[in-house]
Image (cartoon, rainbow, N blue to C red; front, side, top):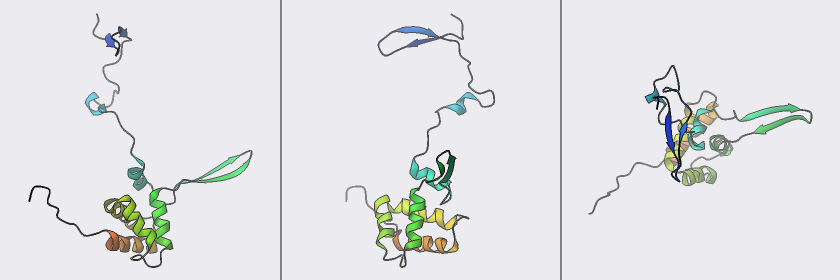
Length: 145
């Protein structure tokens, strides 16, 4: 058997030979950099890569001009902050922190407060929300007392 032939085996024990394959999938990258294969980011992690409001797509076809809005959690949170008059007592803002966790809420506030596409009002409200709802760090004993 040549060094390029690969013997395969399935779960039910059937063995066979696969077609010869290249030892390196990419001529530019070494093979150790290609393992493990890339996995897509989940929606909560990917939302921080796009500034708020970038999920709008215009489509022109025979039926006319259509507008599609893909609202992420981050853009929904930005809209809730902009609608809130009192950040400290607003139920919608507080529910974002309770529902998605205080760490994720602070991450969303940080993303909005540091984004160049955010208005100064949104930046200010995001900072306020992080300080009002972000909670203080606590020490928790995990061992026996």
